[in-house]
Length: 187
Image (cartoon, rainbow, N blue to C red; front, side, top):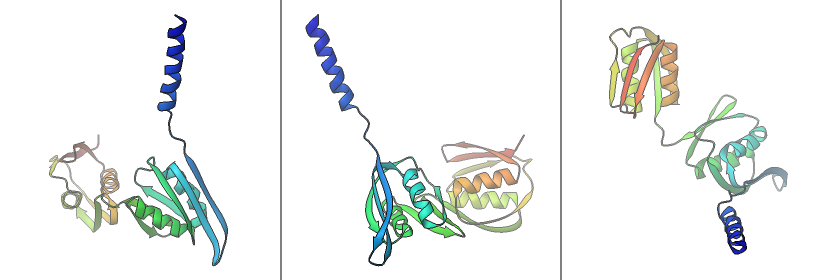
């Protein structure tokens, strides 16, 4: 019996070590450099969100992430500015970085986007454009869906564009595996 308990405890200890979660290390700091202040970033298995949160005050702009920020990232380097660090982080994570006013936007480069510039356009024309740009194969629109809208989108992720159009025009939608969308008036 004593031998069983010792074996069980030893096995339990080894199991807990084998399945221990990796630790996350992250640090962002500034230091004097040859050409002014440098930004030093060291992240091991840190969430993208935590890195962006640390860089945001150093950029002087709001960072908006239109991607999964929970993923873990390894990222190291010394940079001339926080914006340079953000640009390299975007490249390494396969994200597109763009500026919009006082915001820096990060989005997945593989995600479909919508560019739409319409004024008082018929809802059916707007939905047809969204269908084409977002790669929706089948779009079913209830016969009672009517109206028009004015929208100006430039490279807006499809999910955001669809939500905006549906909420603005008082519509609801049921999505099924990206290939079928059923649009109706919101109840």
